[in-house]
Structure formats: C-alpha cells, structure tokens
Length: 152
Image 1 (spheres, helix red, strand yellow):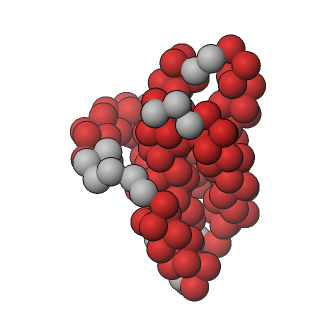
Image 2 (cartoon, rainbow, N blue to C red):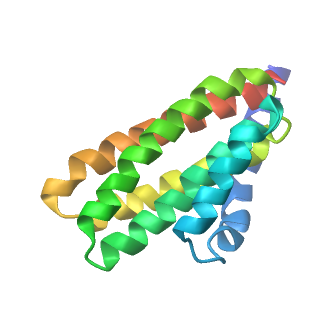
C-alpha cells in the first residue's frame, strides 16, 4: 500500500512537472545545424549520457519537422519523422546503460510526444500514418524511460 501511494505521488509530480519545463523546451528555434551538432556529440558521448542526448535530438527533430510542415515542406517533415523513429530506437537501446539524466529524458520525451500529438491533429489525412508511427515510437521510449525512473 505504501509503495502504491509513493508511485501515485511520483506520477502526479511527473505529470505536473512536465508543463512547467515545457515552456522552456521550445524557447530556441530548431535548425539542422543544431541537430547535426547534437548527433555528433551523442555519437562520442559516454554511454550514460547518450540517452538524454538522443531524447534532445528527437525533440529538436520534432520541432524542426513541425516548422517544415507548417511552411508547406511536407517531404522534409516526413523525412525528419522517419529519422525520429530511428533515433527513438537508439533511446530504447541506450536506456539500459544507467543514464544519469533519466528523469530529464522522460520529461523531454513526454513533451515531444505532446508536440507530435499536436502535429497529428494538424496534419493532412495522408500524412497521419507516419506521424502516428513516430508518435508510437516516442511514446514507447517515454514509457520505458518512466519505468527505468521508477526502478531506480
């Protein structure tokens, strides 16, 4: 019973903390150079740091994809969505490596899933399957990150 109360309390805190952090997550405009720099940094980072860096890459790619979609560049946005799916797989693989910013990773993935949901609602009918697949990948990575947070 005590564990259940603790888990419920942590869940409530995590759900209320995400909106507070979310406003600062979108403060810098996304660009391809930032994403490339993050990818280079992630490839050379320690295994403990890679998970958060991959989450940051996914977030930046999502923001850039939304920006491109809003500008009418659907092909560019779809290309980024496919890359997001690949990086989400890397998050899945790096979760077990004892990440040192696991809670931040989970919060960032939660915000990214929220932004992808916004994109899903604003996308055309023919673009929705790719957005849904990407959202499912990010949600899966977020769920796994949350489970790792609760295990520690």
